[in-house]
Image 1 (cartoon, helix red, strand yellow):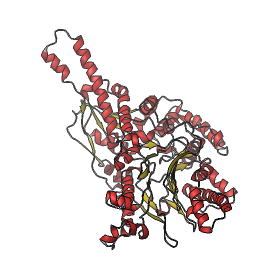
Image 2 (image 1 turned 135 degrees about the vertical axis):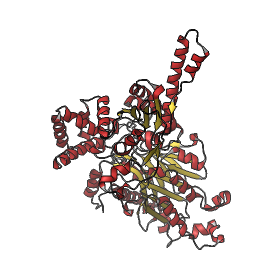
Image 3 (image 1 turned 45 degrees about the vertical axis):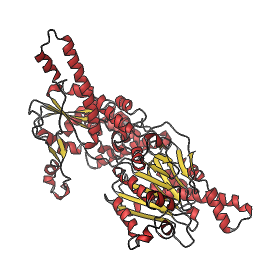
Image 4 (image 1 turned 180 degrees about the vertical axis):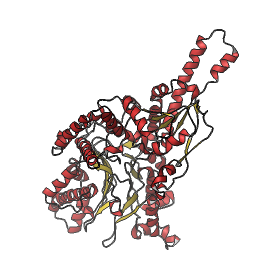
Length: 628
């Protein structure tokens, strides 16, 4: 109900033929950049704060540019970026625009290597200088580098210090800048190593350069860099000489998929995007394995390389619940399972009274889970009908009709009406404005008789629930409102790319803290704070997640009940219950995506434990300053 800013999106297009080939077969030499545009538009859900692209052109003459970049900020950044690209072609004759040889020789962005990025900030930094791709320039083609990624590192401080101790002087203390400098340094060393190897062959300067470019091993650059990173990442890059790559973290936290044929290599963050853009079957799209890189050489040959030994796979389950497009075949079924598996808890909440219960969903991202819940409820109701028929004696046609006409009732109860600009209101009217973000379908339930069950994909802060949703649902005067989350309670910060970094972001944490205070257990808060504080100077590998102890005294049901109390507006008299998915059912639905640290606190990397402890320490210290 409240959108979570999350993982960025990446896209690579590597053409394996000359531009003339695509012009002849597809009617345009812009085939590659058109594919990049589609890949980015199909992933616009992954980043709406900025976008950028890079193009590398091979076989240019000295004095001619061979790397091009455009970036833009804002929700319309994709359109703006590609508009800027196409401005380069304004004023050209039709003959020039339709000539692939002229384009390859003379026009910007008429290359065979393209890389795109969609940005969601997880750090709060917003300026064009923070929009990917980032570039490092040199007079040597092989030492030019462009990088972008879907990542968040937990140990930037360690990498920064390591670079400083090696004699480097990074210009900015930010993960992307440090990544670029680290990659650039290792690329320089790899070029130097290759140069020393080929220089023994008595070649001329240009011949040496060509041999260096032909024998450059990007996997050496990656292996000497990636081993130091703690976090979730998919990093993409391209050199000025034509080496292109995408490398995935060893835990498989962040997703990456690829497709290869004789004409093209495509890499993207989501599988159905590649299927749609390239019109290929699901079996043609492959996943980059944890710790693996796909590398496309200067000559367009493709190889897979294991960069770092894979760790226990902890692929992000939030990708399946919320972030990735529901059009993926597996994700669609998983989301339906999430809706199905929560049915026992829903039935308990309404006292098994499906006859007087209306089911709905909000927002649209919960629609697939809603379908799964409906199918499961239909199965449940059919079993009741079968049982009633089998037990009935001398069943009349009227009685049979009464049994068979029972159905699961569902309605489109809530509709997101407009994106109201609540910031223009004065503070005393903001809550009233917020209640109008959604509208309701009047007459969809029987007042004071029907329960209303509304499924959502997740409940993080609960702000929209309290300020808007519950109030507008209450206008229908249901007997009871049950809010269902298809994901478990979000209790812990994320440090791998999702914008959930503060303890007070989570309504589950607020509920646990409220319960501790109600039960005179404030001493536990102090104890956890002192344990966490004592770990701040320890190596990340020795840090323990003591914040788990905040939740330990209470059951999931107790916390859910307190969440419902906290989120129920004082003027709402209808009974509110909140039902969450169970962890076991989440894993049963999303079998291959075990990353659940935001629910369980079981971080796959040592840096996660350090982050959650620091977040708790900051929360306590900030609360004390504010006398909370």
